[in-house]
Amino acid sequence: MRLVNLRVVYATACGLALAGIVHVATVFAIPALSETDALTRARSSESLEHPQRVYTLATHGEPAPAEAWLPIPDPSVAVGVCAYDLEDGPMRVSARTGAMMLSLAVHGRKGAFYAVTDQAAVRGALDLVVLTRAQYDAALANDDENEPSRDVRIVAPGDQGFVVVRVIAGLPSQRAAANDAVQAVSCTTDSPDEPDPEPAPANPPPTNPPPAGRAKPNG
Image (cartoon, rainbow, N blue to C red; front, side, top):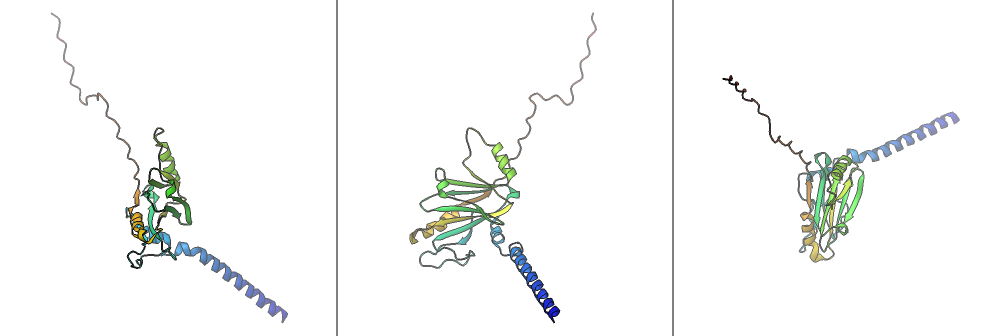
């Protein structure tokens, strides 16, 4: 009887352990297997030159549009996203700062890895460039020592991700301006510079030189 009870306890313990392993593995696999995760939703904006609308603030008594897909969005923050694929080149996000607070947060597959606000702007402009390590090294090599770059360069842990643009409307009267400020942000891919053609030689040799003339005999 005791042997039977031990077998039942052992089988139950093995079943619980196996169920726990399956549960933990399923939870960790959800981001990779999900077809509606944040990166998948954001990648539809790769062909856009301005952020995809994620949350647009309500104006003139109208409710916020239904395109919001962030959990519990802040009713005072307009949100947009720009997806990037660094295989096509570095991702440049350019914004002009104003009276309302603006922030940019860079996300990869494993979450956010960098954020910056309009306090980092230089002369009212904020240029954030997301690059791979190789692209970053190439950009440093091409920098002009006399004119240092004003770009905020970020090395991404992976090729794919997205940048979240947020603009805070402190007053209800600023909501329309906050929506416009998100859409005014530029999201472009920096194409790699094409190599300059080799200069032609100053005096190219003739392809078919004329035959030398015959010398006249003396006398």
